[in-house]
Length: 414
Image 1: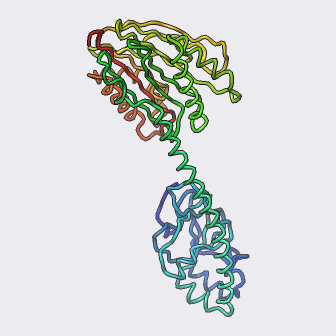
Image 2 (image 1 turned 180 degrees about the vertical axis):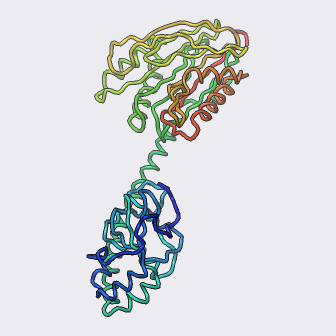
Image 3 (image 1 turned 90 degrees about the vertical axis):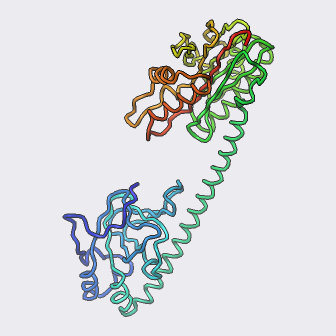
């Protein structure tokens, strides 16, 4: 919505003087004697507002009584919040309290549709309308009714706002719990010198469906996992927690990537009435030899970074996703790392990030960011990719979770 200043001049081509026909049925004006009404209207004007345009702006002075002749306006107590606005139908008067008490406007009034508004200047209200026989009593009666109705609407708006704030607090707590389940890179295997690791996750919403993990399978084998649950929000977050928990449980019982991934898939598919699914990529790095074994359920292929700055995708079939069919088989593969090589796992929130023109960052953008950065360590590489995605996206809203996980093999004797 455009937060324009209060319109002070009528649009070009629009009539700047109202007629008695415009006032038919209007509270306060409709019952006035024709000579008095004509005298009043001669000092008034009509303004037009486009959808989304501000008619009144909170904390600004208002010098006119407003009558909505056509269209629908909306009262917003706070434009930053997403609570439901209070509608103002055609024929309704507004702005009267700021005219009566002389204080700034207490809420924003925006044009919900194209609006035609009769503006009665404050001096006309006090000199002509209020002094009309019986008008003061009618004004008090009508203002009382309007205030009662506004009080009810305000109460409902405040109730909606409290619900919104309570949900926001719950989601913030859920995010803290979810992020707390992910291992923090600073705490990963501090005594292990044969590898360096880094991870980064940026949910598109307060909670998301991406996850990563790393754990040791015995003294010499490192398991890396990255997952991306289909969908976003609370449902994806719950499925993510379940997948991560199952993966850790399987890793405690199974020694290889393919067996762990297959066990997670079976467990997810066995109790999945909503038919949700997750893409899952597991990599087991042998810290003695640098050999990596993969198991992949529908995830994107990893990237291999050489110590001299080269970056390329390691081909890996996607096969089926995890969580739908208990017997689905994931793709497997192997890769031999050399000392100084870095393996990067990522989610599609990286490559599918779009700019305002809907152009994707894409695989080429990911490789270009890594080659340009020539990172000295995994953490530097992840920061470079995140910054490149942000530059590409610009003002575009983040549409999907962004997750990165990287490990550099330093060699068996590091």
